[in-house]
Image (cartoon, rainbow over all chains, first blue to last red; front, top):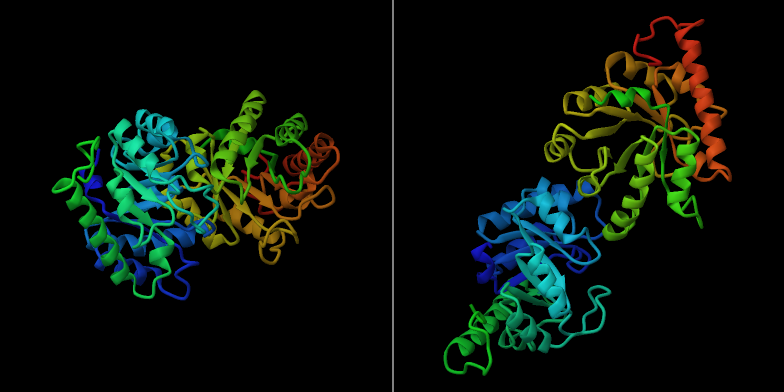
Length: 229
Length: 229
């Protein structure tokens, strides 16, 4: 398991439609300046060659900042771009096959909604879990919001790093952390922000604040020792 | 180079939208009964899991007939489905990378429109060429039709098997063969036919007739010796 996954406070997922009229490489540079430790390149409907060419440009800037560069869904692109890994879910190629195709060296993130899913993903080669939608979100047809309780149950049951996703913004980013997530993945709140660097800085500040609270003064009863690391 | 590529007279490319309201596995069974030596599974907008699940069903029937099972565009699906290979073009992942990802054992078909493209594809690991659109076609935004002359020029210049594609039906299927193509790839003419087995049989009969003419009585001046094999 890639140790850097434990260090991810903020994963920013790209969406060119939301970040309209802006060069995506510059958008990514701004979120990295803001402190994002992971960038997930996600464009659902972009053609393969265009995705690849843009991916090369994004990877260059992500590498410069020493952050993790993940690809959403497209396993072949993760191989072609030599990304750090791929994020998939139940609508994508089956996890065991993706692990077989990518080999042991690549990171696989897997989207889950329940403890059972999480356990299955752990047993089938996932390196981290995306759990959500925690809150209501308009980004995609993600289903009803789960709330933060599921984060606590999953992180107590499964020893994988967890990123909370779905409707997360400054006003609600601390609850997922307090409930066990190691970090958060954001799309709309950052992609739609006028100052993306400042937005990531504020989100990350709040995540770190919540982790400090967990580690130090106010450990919550029943918390898994991994929480907050 | 896979020797079976020289034996492909008819490659049928799937399109669920054209073959509406029919089970695609049964459609594929019909075209195999008609004698197609290659099936290319092509669904541009289907989600990955659905594509994979349908691909498993199609592969099963294609294998039963001993035909070649190719995947359009999606390199990860070709790996996951353990298909014979993938067909790509200039809008997909770059050919040299796809060869690297798939390794030497898989077939790569590459779409070209000119001798220069064909030469480049040959040098960069393509196993066969798709050349077209030869005639006008409504299947996709394929650009203006090339005519059959380009087939003669490409097959004289490059030693790869060539499948002609684009607007090919019973009334015009022989000209591509006479001009150097080893076979034809068809979408609309077969996917839209009420009796797909009979349609493939008739197309294949005409291809074989044209090859016999080439081999026997009426060799055309300047033809490459590979033509018709």
